Length: 80
Length: 80
Image 1 (cartoon, rainbow over the protein chains, first blue to last red):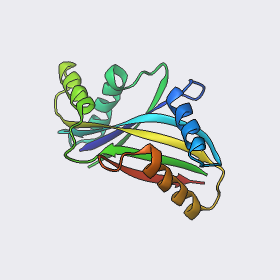
Image 2: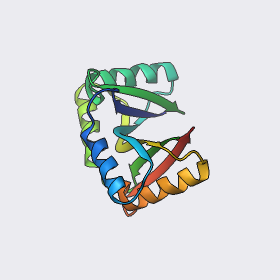
Image 3: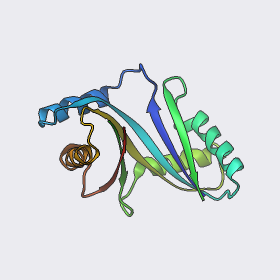
Image 4: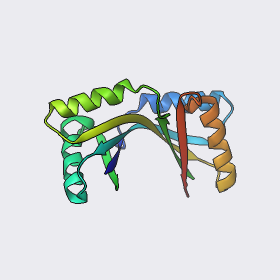
């Protein structure tokens, strides 16, 4: 089973990388870009084939290592 | 219109961050994790409301700034 974890900064948390992207896009002549926010995506290959068990395991991985729940939100997508 | 750009390293390109995640997960006792790969996700807010024009603009942004087409693949998802 494959898991894709998308980790984004919570709304309201300052995102300097996103700001840099905004400025660079404007500098390159791309008008009409409002906000830009950058996050991470982590793709995992899991031996587990049961969806509920896989989700629970990835949830635990997020809490313990992959995300910082104080500042970041995460979303887990599973595909067989 | 909102655009989400997911940028991942091409298959075969060494991913040290992914390797570090694999090792850390194993070290924390998560067995059954095969490969881990890390990528970036960039969320943009665009003034453009036409989907085709927005896709073309984001495509150009990816080629010029957001992604490195030599080493990275990108995927664009648009939502109104």
